[in-house]
Amino acid sequence: MSQTELNVRFLRADDYESWCALWRGYLTFYEASVPDVVYATTFERLLGDDPQDYSGLIAERDGTAIGLAHYLFHRHCWKIEDVCYLQDLFVAPGARGSGAGRALIEAVYAQADAAGAPSVYWTTQEFNHSARQLYDRIGQLTPFIKYQRG
Image (cartoon, rainbow, N blue to C red; front, side, top):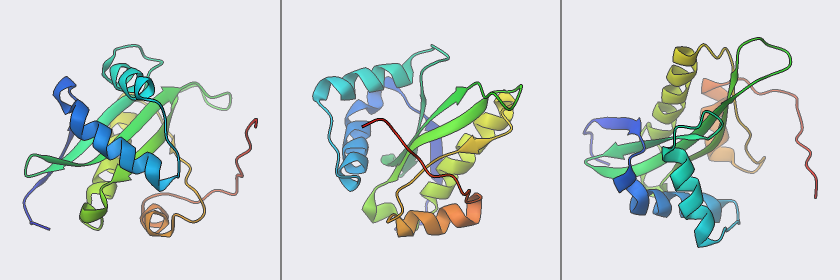
């Protein structure tokens, strides 16, 4: 991988095709898929200004999108301030180890700090060992186990 500067920025309308490719890679990693209408709707929401919607970041190197992050601020019953949920984080396989994942997480941390949100949290699957190596360095593992309705 080239040693050129990594850039993390907000998602733009002209990112749709590269964002779709990255998000498809993310969903494929988790053995999931969604209909095309979900891609279009999610992207539209990521670009929107509704505070209930997610925000999106893109990591790029040499003008090529190599990673994405989606995050959301929400209220929390144990805090006065909002907290930040990092829902999706993905770096293209060929760009892993480049610092893009760390840069995306740190960019979300910066957005949380700017918004006065004291906490950023995320989940991953137990088998996601390579990502968990980064997460163990940049975050704190909690004892919580996730449950959901069928």
